[in-house]
Amino acid sequence: MNADATIRRELGQFLKTRRRQLTRAELGLPAIRKGPSGVRREEISYLSGVSITWYSWLEQGREIMPSRQVVDALARALKLSVEEHTYIRLLAGYCDPQLLSEPSPQAAPAHVQRLLDAVGGYPAFAIAPDWTVAAWNDAYAAFYRDLSKVPTADRNLLWLIFTDPYLRGLIPDWEFTSRRHVAQFRAEAGPRLGQPSFMRLVTRLLDSSEAFRACWESHDIERFASRQRIFHHPVVGELHMDQHRLAPSDHPHLRLVIYTPVLTTDTPERLRQLISGESGNPTGNMIGRRDRAGRKVP
Image (cartoon, rainbow, N blue to C red; front, top):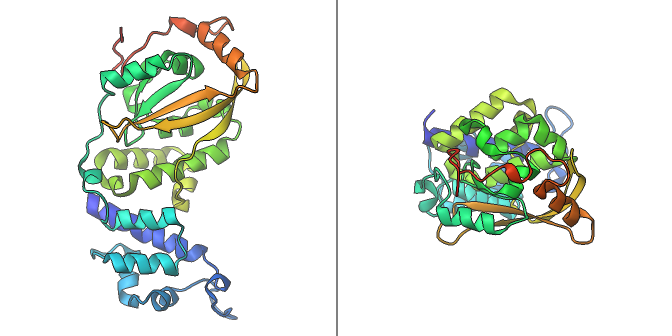
């Protein structure tokens, strides 16, 4: 399946999923005594003013190009959220052309690595548009693991969340967090889902993880929001961290994720012990920074 066909299929599946999640009462439609009780294509067609043939073709992923007015009308009829409305606009091609043409960086620029290092005692890493981990600092390696020892093909945040038992053990609310990550990944990926690196990642995860498949087929969309996280670390115990995400102005497609300890807890001291090696953590400060290719960073 080529990139355009992948995006059309994604748009069709998204529209179908949202239609099936609606109830007739939400749209002010009468209940049906016989037959399927859900909202029908014909009814979305009527409510949006889009012909039934055109709407059916959209759900089927046919090779058609909806206008922005059609996309907006469907968003209103399907009662989409702002995030969901933005998402179908992106899939329909109404987005910044750079979103389609910008290549995924193979490694973080040197100044980004220096910024991660300057964060010092706070775990931090950078991810590419396809969520490949492009760089990390010593604190993150002590908190999670030295990613230079992970095969390059597996250094992807979404892949690690669904396939690494150790990372799953760190996250006590894994079911909630994993679904949230998939919803955020999908919202950010948008039309990039047709690019080879995204297609390979999603296909690999669908083949490897039933949990990912369930999340992916829900077609949920969510924007990233900073929040407080709790981690159960096997060495130092419970860590209460605030999660932040930044984008360098000269490399806006990179995302820098930084965890800072909640000061009203004992996390600052626990984190200091973990990173310094005082806790008995075998990795500690002997890790040494490395770039995505596994080369030692001076």
